[in-house]
Image (cartoon, rainbow, N blue to C red; front, top):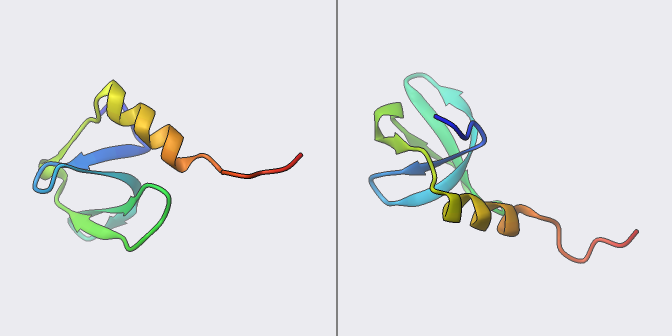
Length: 66
């Protein structure tokens, strides 16, 4: 996969951040936080450019002050 940080679960078409693996599963977390879920590697696909852009926007800190 081209994006090692993000993947899409093809069962739900849900974009997630790769958190690691447990047994045969890849663990994904919703962008911006939330409960992780497990997905078999064969059910993942590489995110599109639009999905990666969405991940970058949702994953960036909001309201950070310098």
